[in-house]
Length: 172
Image 1 (cartoon, rainbow, N blue to C red):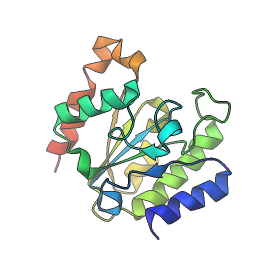
Image 2: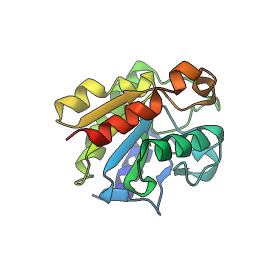
Image 3: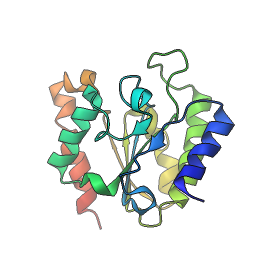
Image 4: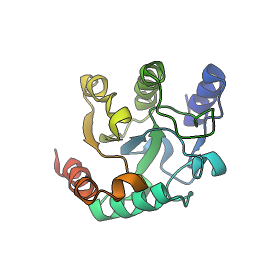
């Protein structure tokens, strides 16, 4: 199964507009998977592509800065979300517990399509709810804050993101 097949399955199962993975990204050769909340209205909601290099909303700009500072190479990262589609109401509502449960199952499936995967970064409290199940799969997981403008405004939280991301590169 390809990542395009995976995305089409999600669209069919959810009946929602699930954005595509970045066609210029590593796709199934990804070494790192980054999972956030849900596609944002100002980013993937407009471009239909999950990538901070293809979107220019504030969260995407923060991600480019954070991953560069942490030593992650953007061309080795695949981006996804715990809830794979934008808020149907047009806002940025937190996913329901059922959406988190289903999103975790979708992530398990996605991980099977990434044979070179070294680690997963779960960014934000909702994405982190998948951590126990992913760790049970034997995947290295780092949990850190979501790179939103609200978190960036909280300097003490924001400053922990780069060390958390850098630490996963140092683990063997």
